[in-house]
Image 1: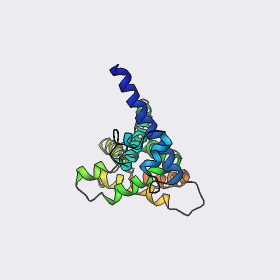
Image 2: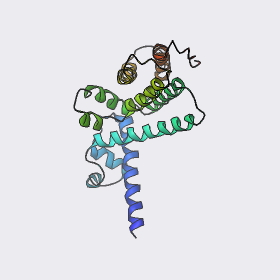
Image 3: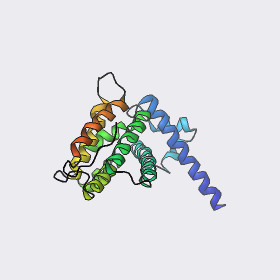
Image 4: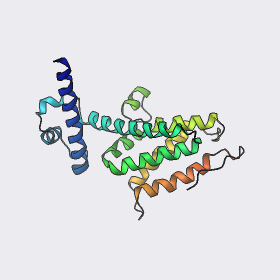
Length: 203
């Protein structure tokens, strides 16, 4: 009985997340209401608060789920022992693809930057964690001597994070993913440790 109840709870939560993703995609985050989400999920509005405190929390949950998908790709790629540049490129391009296909998470990228000067516990609670993922790979590259270490990893990860924000408002006649790919290419060329003679990833 308890297992069946837990399964029903899981299914209801998933219905809310799926409905929210559709509503955010169609109407935009600002124009989506909790009532609209629950109507699309075919559940009562009161049920929403059994699982989430706000639509912002739903958006953050969706973004963190997407981050987990990227982490799985990174983990799979790590098994073949790629360079840190290859891992960072993969991470950036996977992120670009997921953002392109789920544009509703862009507000989180913007808000994460706006709140970066807040206390750590606040800024982290408002972030889907993509910047932290970039930073982990950059730190790996610096420790291995693949990336230059005269610039802190958090500065580089912040630069990468900002690329997605500026690209979202780009007026250039190229796709979002191609725009990101070209900008990441320039950034990777700039952070490689030239002294170590590490060869770059082919583009």
